Structure formats: structure tokens, C-alpha cells
Image (cartoon, rainbow, N blue to C red; front, side):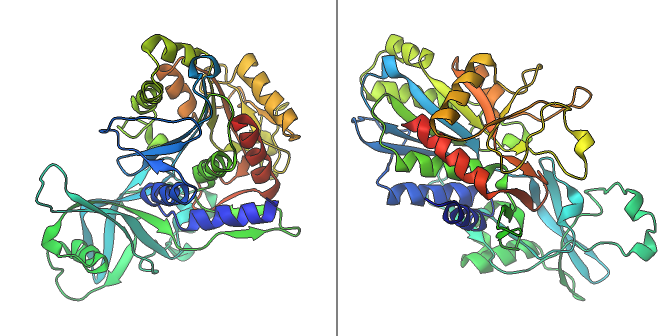
Length: 429
């Protein structure tokens, strides 16, 4: 696959995945088209060599795997982990706020958002609504994306805040509420719920609850003088989820089991049933072993012979803020995937797991780079350390270098997108 086609496919996937529910639903569709079989956690699994399977968790997390051989205890699992969520805004219940004739929506910040980047651009909402059913414990769930420009977060004019370019602290309860409409009339009760019901084609009284998120309506682009850059929101971390999915479906493993894990809620700590800080991955890996007629000892032997790539985007050195980078480890866009290290173990990479990844890059004929935080700055973390606390598996933290991380619109390299796909393929081979 050429780099431009791969980049265009990634952008299309992201454009069609305005929130984690859509991302995982699109991954489900992609896997089904590639011949993967969907399993239910509540069913008995009888797995076969050469077959490919996947499971969903709460609509926003997914684990897919391919059985390369049945000697799992000696060959282990080859795992690439990513996450489906990105920073943004969640719509609260009873969200309507009317001031003068302006109707805004009450939101709360999800993750580490760069608030200023969300202003003055067309926005909409996407997520899921939960609808009454005859089974109280199993209500119906419907995905909903209002596919039109329906709201905006307007900036305050510079004439009313002359110092805005010297730095302004936005209050997310006051300053970042999206403007939905103008109304001189008194709002009806549950006005926004009525909007959702009309768009979904259901009765308003049948909607029990919703999980809805703002998203930017501007489509992704390949930009740059030589088409070097991918410009789109949610690269962190749908670029890793998509790349690992394409690699998994394009390889035929001969040994062990290849696994893709895409969890949710990484941006807020992973503490959910669909997050990395849950038994989801460990339970699924053990279920795979049981489905291959392995006992507990053989499963634990397989774990010892396994390897995890925790794939999350990495920081490139910013040309306008070079002093923010470590003085001797300066990842550049277009120069290959980044191995991330941290003395405080915010990343899982060590000399052994890093060496393995370097060898994978060498085999794939791909360059690699290293990242450390400046010693006077605290960096972020990934699903890697959380997963390592659940499973005793060798783990490396890596990612493609990017700029504008956690902006509404992020920037990465077309070349790096292809490089990491090749490394993912090499691991799965």
C-alpha cells in the first residue's frame, strides 16, 4: 500500500468516527468485511487455527485476534494496544441554557483539551442514545450523528478583552459552551432531547439517556508543499487504532495469536469496564487460551512468552518551541516511530522491550527515534503502565511523532503513518 492511499484511508476512517462509539462500530464493520467472526463474551468459545475473531465491550472498546497456531503456550500473544477516545466535550443532562435569546448547551470537558482550538468552528454532536425496550436490563442502543453544522463556540471580541493574546484562562463552565440556536420563546422541557429524538426518528418519551459528544465538522486533509502532513482531529489515538487494524487484517500469522486491543477512556484514566484499567484484556486472553483447550498453566506460560506494543501518539519537536523538548532526544516528524521512555515508568519501555521494537523496525526497514521528557517537565502516560499492572507481559510504549496533540485538529506525517504500519505488520508476521 502506498503512503498517500494509507493516509487518505486513515483520514476517511477518522472523519467517519466522530466519537469512540462510531470508531469502534466502524472497526467492527471493517473486521466483518475482512472475514472476522464476532464473538459474544456470554457464549462458549470454540476457536480454530487460522480463524479470526473479535469481541466488543460496551460499544466503545474492541479486541480482535487471529489464531496462527495452537501452540499458544510456547509462542504466546503478539499484542498491539491503542484507545478509541480523544479529548473533547461531553453534553450534560438537561443541557439547555438560555441567556437573552441565545440557547447554549451545558457541557463538561473530557480529557486534556486545548480549549482555545475549539472556538469559531462549525460543530455538531455524535454518540449514542438509549431507548426503552421490553427488557429493562437490556435497553436498545442507537448510534446518532447529527451530520450538519448546528453549533459553534464563539470567541469574545478583542475589543472586550484587549489582553487576550497575552494569555487568557478559559473557564469551561462559562466560556466554552456551544451556541445552538436563537429563540425568543420559552424553551420546552427537554428541548435538546427533542432534537435528538427528531434526528434519530424515535419518540422523545422513549429516550432514557444519552452519551453525546461535540465534534469538529471540518474534514481531514493531506497538506504541505510535498503532501507531507496529515491534518485532522483525533489522530491521538485513532491513527494507532486504524494502523493496527489494517496490519492485523493484512497478515497471516504462522505462530501464536495476534491480538489487537482498542480500549476506551484512556484520556480520563482508563477506569471503566471498557478501559485498560479493567479485566477486559486479561479475561479475553484467558478466554482465548480456554477456547484453544489450554489449561491455566499453559495460559500463564503463554503470557510469559508474549509481547505488547502500547501504541499511542508521541510528541514531535515543535519548530517554534524547540526549548520544550529534551536536549538530546528530539523526535522529528517523518523520521519514523518513537520509542517512549520515562524513569517514573509513565511509559513501560525498558532496554529489553525497546530493543525488541528496534529489531522489528530494522526488519521492516523503518527508522526509529527515542523520546524522553525534559527532566523539569511532567509528561503524559498511556495504557501501557495500566496494562502492565494487569498482565505480566513485556511491554514497549511507542507512537508516531505529531504536533498539536489534544488540539481539535492535530498534525502528523504521511511517511510516519506508513512506517508504523510496516512495523505493525512485521510484529504480526
